Amino acid sequence: MRALVLQEKGRMSIEEIPDLGSPGPGEVRIAMHTVGICASDVHYYTDGKIGPFVVNAPMVLGHEGAGTVVEVGEGVTHLAPGDRVAMEPGVPNPASRAVKEGNYNVDPDVRFWATPPVHGCLADEVIHPAAYTYALPESLSFAEGALIEPFSVGMYAATTAQISPGDVAAVIGSGTIGIMIALAARAGGASRVYVSDVLPQKLGLLEGLEGIIPVDATQEDLGERVRAETDGWGPQVVFEASGAAPAYKGLWSLPAPGGRIVLVGMPTSDVPFDVSTAAARGLSIETVFRYKNVYQKAIDLAATDAVDLGRFVTDTFAFDDSIQAFERFLEGRPTDVKLQITL
Image (cartoon, rainbow, N blue to C red; front, side, top):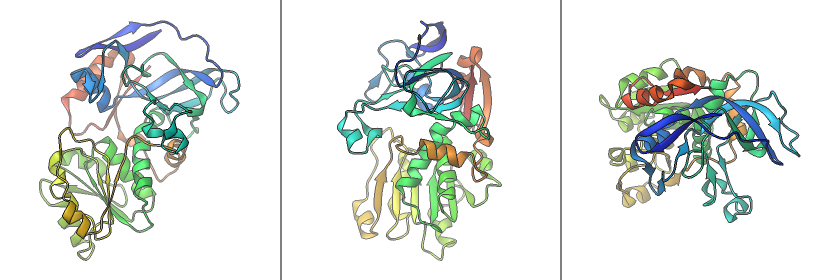
């Protein structure tokens, strides 16, 4: 079968790889249909590593996927051949202490697609645990099914923030994850969600979404805007989704007193932590890494009228054009949100 293989830093190609055979007990074999390109895929392509994860051997890319079940293994009863599915790409070790303590997203033994040395899903077929494979309702397309992975990050961020009905939220950064957070926060009860970015073209993609308010960071300060529209109080919840070090300069004074900061973006360098300001304002600070216990909820919410994931698929490429798709990502077009590949 075919797969998009990262051979080494800066070199990828579509290759023939061995067929997978039949699924084992508790597993399903899936014909892939749509796979989204994530920044992590691109970082492995351009840099050959992300932090401690280094590409030391050829690796199949891709972890945002949807497809169709073609075969089920022994003991699988909730899925059948022909079912359209989305797959949670991180599979923890069921015997790990992290799993037993309810934190499977930070299991040191987790096997996450397209994280060295684990192969990803940009291939004709994959075999995956049925427990981490979810049926898609008819109302969701394959493209939307592949977007469930980044939407789950947004769902987990909103869940971690413990949003209460009527809260005002602010999101720093309107990349894919920032947008997913805004959608989840709004659906989770936030009365308004302010989203700031330095690229007004990206913010334009949010126009018309009820309760989501774009803020051009090149023209106005996010904190001043929200305070001006909340009688000087500010947002109860702030999500940092840009990973940009400059965003941390004024972060600690942005939430309302007693508010919450949820750190989602991953800075590439050290950032300042103003302990005194955070403490004096009584802020709660949470971090988010991937997600846990939200994949089915993300599918259920995406299937309602409250969320339209499909509008954020910018362009779709045929599998034979996968390398061009990655090159398009590297162009950094400000109006691009999610690029996908269909097999």
